[in-house]
Length: 550
Image (cartoon, rainbow, N blue to C red; front, side, top):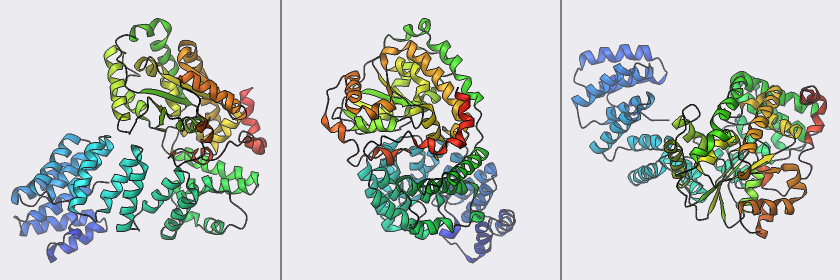
């Protein structure tokens, strides 16, 4: 969140205090009345106009606020707080160019003023210009070594570019400055869990729960890596949570956790009840229209049928590194495949980076006509994002499952690409999606069993089209065959990529690699052969839905 300099942080004189009290209690209308009366008495007070601008901004009266901030600066050009606040308004309006201008102007007028550094770094983080963000934040901590927000933002950047030791170092520094900040201990615990250090991660999460005992999202995280037992002390904490005091979002986290608890306690009826409650509430909060997905296949066919694709294959420059796209339905085994490949010395695993979808959306290529120029730009933008990571191998993996939709675009941008498609039996796949508490909107189809089944049908149709048109670039793996015939299937996979067998790939469950998906608990353990059988424990609840598969 961008930060404005509130008067409470920098008290002026006694006359402002009642107004600040109204502001801090969100009585904005009364605050505005009082500040206007004060300005009538003190028409040359730059701080009064700045405070008026903050109140107007809180009321979403952005143009009036801009006028007040500009007046404040005009009255005293050594007072740079209003410049920072102008940057905030333009950020809120998504006018990032103007926002950057005012933050930089604030810094140029007072290079010891820390807030515009922090706010400007947020723009660069959101636009994924991490180099500029890192530079700013490092400047900020030189000015203020106790800026926990700067260290926290550095943590978030280093997580994004797969520099996890640096991320942990900066987050621990932020925690040493202010241990009680929301999310700090939670994020540290989650980071350790994602690296397979479950005990350390859980310990930090338990510390966080001492500060914020109703954090149901933290219990949900713990449930991903812990098998609950009947006498576990943590159960008392979970069962004692007052559900009436929770937001709807927090109830979703709690219900998923209760579903996992009763699964572990082998009370499958009660487990299904809570999974259903969680998904029903999540669907209410995030309604999903499956009809939108059905519109994609006709678009893809028009763009990428044989008669349309050849003309784009020329004039595509080669890359210094080669992508391996690992894709399929969520919960199909993509994380396992990437974890195995991550142990190979020729491959850098980047995880679920999501860059391709973002760049595709920015260029609007799903709807626009394709040309060599915009395909080349797509590739260039994607690779520039990838190279923010420290890649010293000839191959890297992009394990974003829903990239299956974009295979046509991928193969045009990267004619020599390796695409690994993971397929899994529908019943365990359906159940695994339904019981997973996905974050973000991309997987909202998983909140209804009927939607999951329909989404699976759409996925099958899209993949059938792509396999028929781009068969040489797609290697399909059956999840069930892979876990039951590991060495032979792995050997075939490595041959497809064009690299030699390495024994270390068999030790995929060892090491500290960061895995930021719902599957991190599974891929940090050896292969569990019965993982596709769990759905049978819920068969009586699922059978009516699965009839649609016949």
